[in-house]
Image 1 (tube, rainbow, N blue to C red):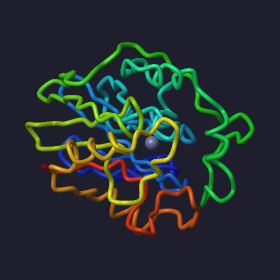
Image 2: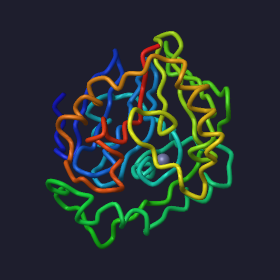
Image 3: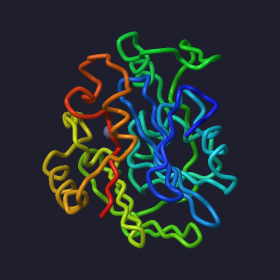
Image 4: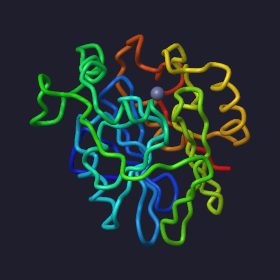
Length: 246
Ligand SMILES: [Zn+2]
């Protein structure tokens, strides 16, 4: 689907469901806009390199609230652009909501970027901007979008605040970094490998996984940076932020 900012590519992956993909950075993040009749959820906000709220405004006129699959910097970069952000009730979440500069700066090292950064992007001042947690959420929490409900499934492991989102009526499961068909970096201090494995089997593993159009695009059109931190397009996909049709 056409969007005005070439930093992003957008794919309609199901009715009223859009994958917003960032192909020019090694994380190859995919955020999902999930739209109901009254409001929409943006599930992750990407790198904060391009303005993701400008993209969501082109896709829906409804109010958009933020849910994060977890609060690593590559999933929360655009949080500060939105009025309402849910946060899991963890110290890890609260710490990350204060923003940070070091992880963000590492993401724009020359071997992490291919193609052009957006016009007006300032390398020197780039950071993960702080955001306000408007309301806390927990396992089982349901958001009514109007004619469409999303339920949080806590999947701690990759981080203490990892979640999946399930849209039962439409048979859709959004899995964040808990499960995607590419190598996952599990050796950060906040990762609990045992729990990550259990969460993966419990949450995402029961679904027939598909990354859909955005995933296929990641395999064919993303950066070919070959970086160690890039989560492996050449091994079968980018970062992914998977979703599944159940
Ligand atoms: Zn992560």
